[in-house]
Image (cartoon, rainbow over all chains, first blue to last red; front, side, top):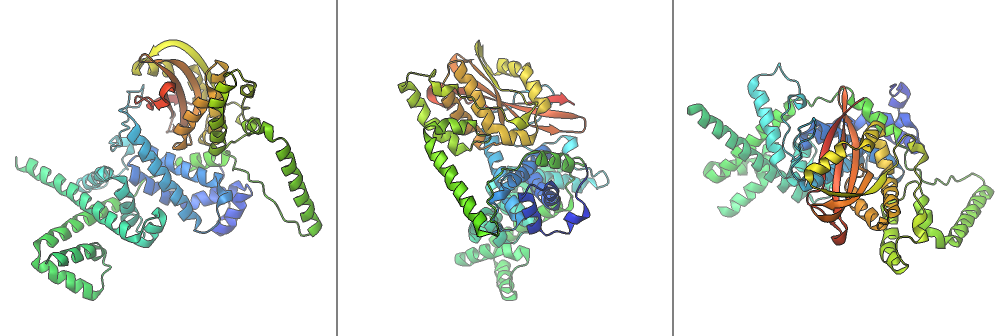
Length: 207
Length: 304
């Protein structure tokens, strides 16, 4: 599939948006290309699963372009899509909660309870990394999934996206104080889980 | 000392992020020397900082084909066309546009009595329109003598754009399902395979409401309360706009009357196979309730 030509790449977001509003698909592609990686990475870390990240990322952009006519430019396009992505993620969490335990399906024995998928194909390829680091990384991923999304989302935005508190507050529609206290609590929970993990490993080591 | 701890607690996040002024840093430092509790707190902050650092160190790998697939899905969905009024440079043209609008309004007002039917034939009815339509129908139907009312004969047209998409169907079955047998039914459903072959994420997002209407119409044909079913489907798809209700059954579920609705989710494309997602919802019409066994989720492999 041919992707955007150099012409689109030189246009500003605003110019691309007005082109997208008139149905220009090249402009849609270029806008997607500019921002999908950051949104995907956030969703991957938030859901812990590649498939969910792919679905939610596509859905967020699809919804954004479907409703591009109502985009007034009050915030940046990126913030707008990000907001949609976060909302999609919230809906996703709500639905996952409603799901009963899965019935074994013909092929894919994936778990739908929101736990971390440990299948090798979903783990980033990192054979050249030392084992310890990989293990810590996997532990953090698992621990994150145990933190309530209410705390997980601001934590990820702050720690991984490196967004300032004010921007997170705007994005989530919360007061800055609430954002800070949620990040604080999330970090405490994360630390406790990591500490517990290390303690059990130590114990195993001494036995 | 306690008030001091609360003050430090407030500052400790900023402290670990290096956001404190020198004076604040000094204050926090002094307090930490004398307070073991706050030192433990700081240790936790450092522990989590290390954990998050480990997370940041590993780049997230995005599947090579994702961009291409996503762009295909996104651009294949038609954007919601809003009526755009372009202001012509000449006043005369603007005036004629306004006149045309007034004319359209007059026509709309004139055909108001058929308003419900009009919304049914729209390509992409909004949720609120559906609900407005539904709210008035269930009681209205009972009063006017039931489901055979003329109003129910209008069927939602399948969108022209969705050529190749299956037409939803609803049947009444003499079956008493449980979790396992319902799964077997869906796995062997020929319609499911057709949907898996033809649908894209764009389709599902655009046509979800149209399918809900059409499926409700199918239920009406077998003398069920289509409006009620449509309202229940809207309830489910509101939080998941990409689900396409394509098949329904009136049957028993563990001995109770139930509507079984099968939704298709957009396929997930892997390297060589696609997983087509199906969700099965068991609705209990008597109590307008969703059975707790619902949203039985099936991921079914589908080879391209």
